[in-house]
Each structure stands twice: as structure tokens, then as C-alpha cells.
Amino acid sequence: MLLNVYSWNLNGIRAAKKQGFLSWLQNSEADFVFLQEVRATPQQLEEDLISPNHYQSYWHPAEKKGYSGVGFYSKIPLNESDIVYGIGDPDIDREGRFIGVFYNNIFFAHAYFPNSQPEGKRLDYKLKFCRCIENKLQEIRKKGFSIVLGGDINIAHTEIDLANPKQNIKNPGFLPEERNWLSHFLKLGYLDAFRIFEKRGGYYTWWSQRPGVREKNIGWRIDAHFISECLKDKVSNAIIHDKIYGSDHCPISLQIKV
Image (cartoon, helix red, strand yellow):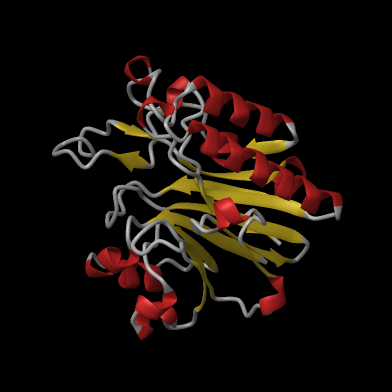
């Protein structure tokens, strides 16, 4: 079967609901929808967000209220034992940044990578997160599973992944240390799924909320799906849905044969 996997940083799920998120979800034909920056606990969500038509939901919120948090919807019935909440490091997991599911010998991991902050104030924490997620996925690969890692990576990898690279060389998300880690990660046997199909620049997933910025497409591609190299021939498309509004990010999707 072909599995439609979506990822979207909602910048607050309750705010996104007011902008039509549930209508989008019902029309998306998605099997899995992974969400970042939910900014709510399940107890704070209304029933239509907990159990939308045809979907089960799973949540890993942050301890801090109104901050971070990830979750996902599944149209496919899953066993609770197949869900992984958190990365295994309390310092990271209290921020609600990782959730995953084992399905058909693939581990679908989704994450909300930290922002390294101006002047690199959280760069060490960001790089710790990167190492932890790398180690987690490598351990799972050793058990015979293929990997799909998606989410808000908060890293623009190369100069074609943002509109103004020279002006942002010292800014969070485009720091050499972050980009070097992502290069290292890809060398471990992963592919950037979007780049299988599109080699050109000008495709972005996040835009500043300043007036006119998104309309002018002055953005960054910081949301992505990475796949084990062995899955390359099973991926039929990887799409940036930049015409979908409701957040400062847009959804991205991956269609994969499982």
C-alpha cells in the first residue's frame, strides 16, 4: 500500500484549529499526520482535536505549558506498544520534541528540533539533541528497521534552502555547526526525500510573519523528511504544500510504499 505521511509545525494546534486545521485534515487523505509545536496537553484539547473523524491521536507534550510539544494522527489502527514517546533523555524529553511509531518494518520518527537561538545561546542543547536523535535512530536501524525521520528540523542545510543565505550565515538555523551535523547525518545512509525529486532552490517551508514576506517567498526550508537509502525506490513523491496556510510553516508530505 501507499502510505501518505504528513508533517506540519502548527505553531499552536488550538490557533491552527481556528484557521481551518480540521477541515484541512479531513481533506488531506493522510494516513499519518505528525505535528510539531502543538503547544498544548491532551487535557487542554477539545474532543474534535483528540478524535477527529477516522483518526486516532497520540501526544507527547512539553512539561512547560504552552510550549513545544509533538503529536500525531493515524488513520491506521496502531498498537500502543508500537508508539515511542520521547528520545530517552529527560533533559530533552521534558520539552516534548520526539514521537515515533513502528509500522511495517519502518520506524517513522518525527521531531521538533530545538532552535539554537540568537548568538547560539542554545546551540549546545541543539547539538545534544542532534546527537541523541542520531544515536536513537542508529540503534533502531541495527535492529533491522528502516527509518523515516520527519519534522521541523530547524536547519537550512545548504544555500539553496533559504532565500538569503549570505545575510543569515551567523543566524540560528544556518550556523556551520548545525549544517555540519546534518551533512554528517546524511553520510550515515540517509537521503533528504525532497531532494530526490527537486534539485533547485526557491522551495521553502517557513516564512517570517512580517507582512509581505511569505507572499514574496522569502523563506527557509527547515521542515523535511529524511529516509534510509534503502527506501529510495519506495518513495513516490515528497511535496512542500506551500499554498496551505494556518501557521508560519506549511505542511510537507511523503508518499511511501509499505
